Image (cartoon, rainbow, N blue to C red; front, side):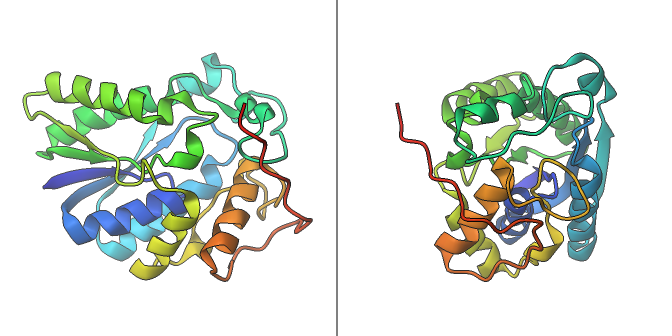
Length: 229
């Protein structure tokens, strides 16, 4: 299948890019610059991996998101919360309907360049906090994309039932250089080690039994995962 891969530059989406290259004809990787605090750190990672694989890379600017939406993740928002990535305070990092916006644009781009599928790296660890990463949403969005395009664009979500440790293991198998991926929502010079995405990243490598190549400001003990309600 000819596909477009949504690739932010994080470890999940970069792994999805490498996996897609094994199974599909990857016509392009797409990143979105929507004003997140860490966009300037992660997009160059996406670009580097796409270049290394010989894949076209497009960066699509969405300045209206930072201007009009409310989220701590955005440059216009408040401080990034710290703690476990499934903790209630991580809801502050939700960008309302972000995946729907990005998938809509990517679907139009995919059809325009002759692709018939979109790959997104949403995974099980995202489900607690981010409603637009859950399978119920992805299934509905996939139906909308298929019905709303002449190409019948399919939405491929290979990691939707995987945890991040499994993704880390798959990336290692595929030869992904995780040192050239970015997770920290704060977007500083190095990963902070304390925000939800840093905690998730640290946990993933530990649970997968992999050496973590990431420099962190803090390697304090990881917070406990909240109990399900």
